[in-house]
Image 1 (cartoon, rainbow, N blue to C red):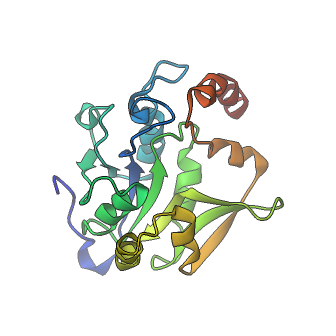
Image 2: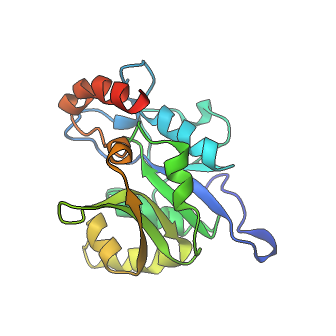
Image 3: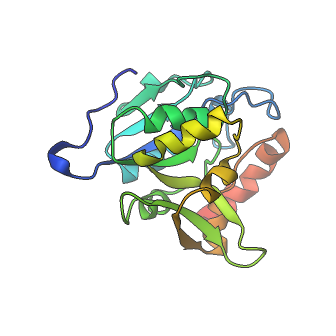
Length: 210
């Protein structure tokens, strides 16, 4: 662990922002955090900028092979404890680092996120997880961004040990609060997973930023 802040002082809840950037990006063919989006920035940069409008400190979790985290101030880099375990491996490292009471977590491939969407997740009971869910269409769950209390650390460890690495299965295994999500905001949660997604991103950015 390098440079991660101390646990909340004086018994006060402390919530930090975090961005997962440790995937192998097989479908994209290159580390997604460094992929240039239509405005020329690495994909992770707008995610970090949104996080920094909502939180004083932001942690990037994972190898982040496509972007130099030290190129931005106020960003700490935390590597996975057990590389190769996917997003849950990053979550395990984050929840076990002792920096905060809980963390609002996003993925590096969500460049349309806003500080408002992230900030909403930080408001509530610190011991309860929080996620967005869209009405209709089977009440579709959006696992990221989400708020994860540090107390979920052992839950994540058990899931990894038992080979249960699906994010949605982890979320369904514990109690959580669900925040409503409008159709407009739902577009901002879009993940860019493939070159085709990247090609369509320009239109998506125009729609979301209009």
